[in-house]
Structure formats: structure tokens, C-alpha cells
Length: 226
Ligand code: ADP
Ligand code: ADP
Image (cartoon, rainbow, N blue to C red; front, side, top):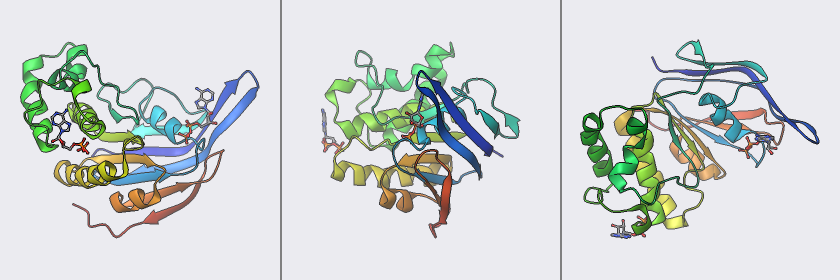
């Protein structure tokens, strides 16, 4: 089963003006297929949690386990979506979705059908040959979601994915993400400033304290689970 487990994780950064304690004693186990939202003030270590789940940063204390194994190096089949999309404007929509397999030297053809079906799922069927600069902000984030899902990552990590979108698009994207979650039954960690969004989408909402980020409370929603 795909699980992710944070065990008493703390993280400090060393800076020229001394250490910054970003995160303190964070423990959480994410079950297979579970949708977790994390809300909390700026600087409470939310992005740090995702970096560590990706193997791009490591805890100062504590352990992070993916399927029971400690994460000690960058996770290769990473599925992550950032607030600002990082699409390459000189590549078509389809080629953007296929970046990861291509960079890893995998057979592109083997992933093309999956890329097309993901694009279809988010309403971008027919947009494969467009370029990112031809798309709206919402459409660009939809492409980012497809790219994150191309490898069937065990867990989808999202860092304020809708933060830069207008309210209406945002609302629409929340509904779509919920649909994608129902269909793929993927575990998700979703970081947001928006408590309403957090509650709408998640099985459990983790509320963080100001820095150093600790878990203030975990709210269980009564969202029907797939
Ligand atoms: P959030 O995503 O909740 O806003 P972050 O995880 O980005 O919080 O940051 C937590 C704290 O750690 C902040 O005070 C931030 O300035 C600091 N921080 C994050 N990354 C680094 C880094 N690479 N070096 C030094 N300080 C950092
Ligand atoms: P969003 O779905 O991100 O809110 P918009 O409100 O900008 O998108 O646009 C609404 C719809 O208009 C889109 O879902 C899409 O079908 C169409 N559209 C927007 N921009 C383009 C474009 N550059 N080329 C073709 N169709 C577009």
C-alpha cells in the first residue's frame, strides 16, 4: 500500500543570521488514497514538508517513510504541482506533459496515450498541440496536474496550486481536482491558505501553528471517501 509517514519531523535552516526553526515535531501518517489538506500561516513550514516528501530536503530530526522505507534521495516518480506553473513555453501542451518520461530516457510512445487521456480528463482534449502561452491560467494549471500524474506517482503533492488563479477559475479547479481524486484514488497532500478549500477537498485538514510549524489540530471532515 502507498503510504507516507512523517515521524517526529523537525527542520531547521541555517542562515547567515542564525538558525531558523521551520518545523517542530510533525507526525502524520497518510493512508493510501487519502486526501490531506494542510493550512497554516506563511512560514510555518508547509513547503518544507513537501520538499522533504520529495527527497529534495531532509529532516533535521525525525524520519519520513514512503511505503515503510526512509526517504534518503530525490524521489524519481515525483508528482508535484506548484503555485506558479513551471511549463516550458517553447514546448507544446503534450510535450510539457511528457517532460518527465523524456528526461528519464523512457520511451515517449509508451506514455503518449496516458498523456492524452489525462488531458482529456481535465477538458484539454484537442489542446495537445497548443503552447502554454496560448492558454489561460486555469488551463496551464490543468496541464501541470497532468504532468504531475503522468508517472502514476504514489502521492500527488500540491503547493497552493490555485493560489494565482481568479476566484471563479479556482472554484472550478477545486471541483475538478475532487473529480480527479475520486477517479484516480490517489493520495494527495494539498497545501492551501484557504480553509474553505481545504475542508471541501480533504478527508483530514491539518492546521498548523505559526513558525515553528507544529500541528495545532487535525480536523476530520465527513467527506465521502471513494
Ligand atoms: P510555508 O510554505 O509555510 O510558507 P516554508 O516551508 O516555505 O513555509 O518556510 C518555513 C520557514 O523556513 C520560513 O521562515 C522560511 O523563510 C524558512 N526557509 C524555507 N526554506 C529555507 C531555506 N532554503 N533556507 C533558509 N530558510 C528557509
Ligand atoms: P479557465 O477555465 O481557466 O477559467 P478561461 O475562463 O480563461 O479559462 O476560459 C474559459 C474557456 O475558454 C476555457 O475553458 C477554454 O475552453 C476557452 N479558452 C480560454 N482560453 C483559450 C485559448 N487560448 N484558446 C482556446 N480556448 C480558450
